[in-house]
Length: 317
Image 1 (tube, rainbow, N blue to C red):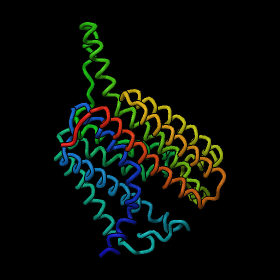
Image 2 (image 1 turned 30 degrees about the vertical axis):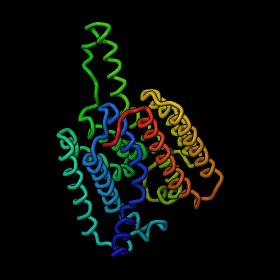
Image 3 (image 1 turned 135 degrees about the horizontal axis):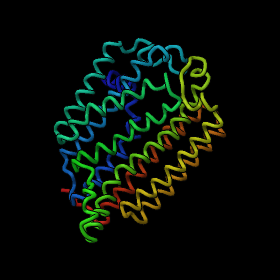
Image 4 (image 1 turned 90 degrees about the vertical axis):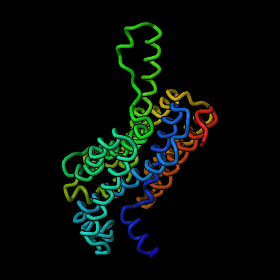
């Protein structure tokens, strides 16, 4: 039984869920702070279920549509579909069940999440097709991953939180109220932009492994289009921009010392990641890709939770 479970978990690379999950949970905590209370264990469980189902659906879809390329690539030829460990019908069933799970979890969250769930499914699956027609496939993956904090925010608040711009023309009191609400509504958007830039940077590094294969088989990416060295420079710029946006998110949320310390740790992780990508062999890329980026997400979630709790944003109930 454990072997069977492990096979399916490795099929969808379940461990990589930790990339998007910390940002989704951080968005949930910040949104809950505005409501002055823990969102409830039911809401937390549904957000978690929606996250897992969305990512499982996306990864299963990716494995299905890329199975022929995976069979040709020496790095991926032993994956479950090319090697026959999992049948195509089983993979399609898992993809469909996961999609249904996301829709069901969204239904029990709130109407807005339910209505947007098909859009989310299209976005998270569409990325797998982009390498066939655009060099900016990393951006599409970033957008797909950025839906996680947006979805978690909407799951708690049911809206972004913007007030009507008409308040600007009412009085100075209403103007400042509108500014305050606008800054709150910008928080999930800024966090989503952070995720996009973060993903673009580390996905370019990950794509270095398949540079020769992708180039010879007509698959597109910024690594193929610009060459490894120029693509690494673009990845570095994306991560530096991410650090700037991440700092802006902290300012929008009125975070203080704990967040700043976490921000410095994240900056150090990203610097180390790029040092590894430039100085070490391709075997080290998995270290840069998985361990360091997992640490980035974990540190971010911890410092956001610390800021929200220590500032009295909410109490568990």
